[in-house]
Length: 196
Ligand code: HEM
Image (cartoon, rainbow, N blue to C red):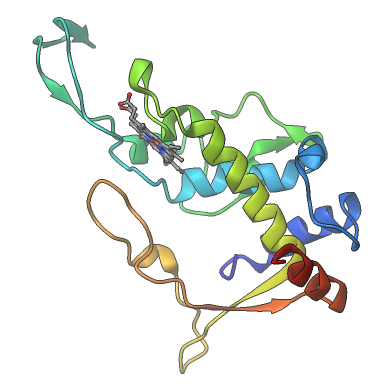
């Protein structure tokens, strides 16, 4: 959000319109918070948590595009490449929640990143609904109450958190330097009330 202030502002505009200043977002707002849901989808796509998913082993021989894959082979799905395929996601390096929206709704013709980011088949992540629901509440609550500002270097340049990520099974930014300020005195009150 610190890198994309326009995305942040659009999310906050939607929250102001749907939720208003006197309460925090709730799951009942889900259907109306289309842009917030698009931010969640784009977050899961742009910097996928498990870029090579989890390895699977073949229980029987298979064939893929003319290649024989023997039983017992270990395969890794390059989910990062799938989620950065410009045919499905033009300008894949850009963080653009708008790519998921058409006529004010989530566009069912755009490939849903959540069908890739949580793995595949019978071992698909059983925590996927908990995770995507929690992400929705987290993004909505943070943007509703806080402004996120980038920390700039000596020359005014913004640090890109995607430039330094951990390697291994799980990928996460090494650091996310930013400052947070309450959006208003109402927002401050909501934060204090929610921490009671
Ligand atoms: C953004 C958050 C999460 C991501 C991106 C994620 C991703 C994944 C992926 C890619 C797999 C491997 C699926 C496969 O083998 O094809 C997996 C497996 C698994 N996940 Fe998650 N996960 C997340 C959160 C959670 C949470 C919150 C829980 C528990 C509450 C959870 C529990 C599990 C378990 C138990 C497995 C192993 C399933 C099996 O092998 O049968 N995950 N997850």
